[in-house]
Image 1 (cartoon, rainbow, N blue to C red):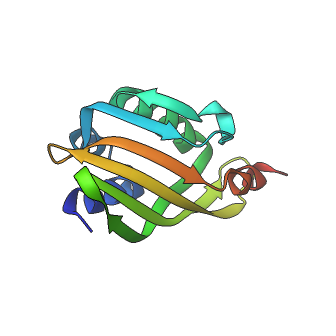
Image 2: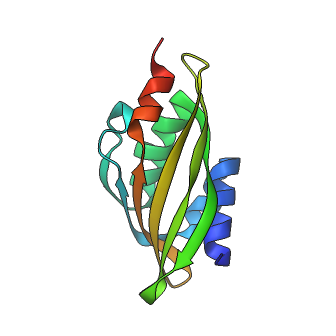
Length: 129
């Protein structure tokens, strides 16, 4: 796995915001799966938008992180990473596990794009009482 990709997943697992800021390109664009809880799905432009309006919102409602299981390098700095999000919903304490595929693109040794595909139903099930 590319060192930037490895560092990215480690930063997410450790909730290391400073590392994430260093790893994300200033022109970063994140595409989050539609149907994600708390309205975080959609397009997010810039590191701050992703940090505050996606990862920040999720961190308030879940104790979770993505765990990469495979990574395939493609052309032009593109990588497809598959794995699982694992964690618990804060409100219910219910654990969950949801598969994901991330399409990441690097530029200048930083992540310039992330497209997330995940089983959003698993995220919602963890919130159900």
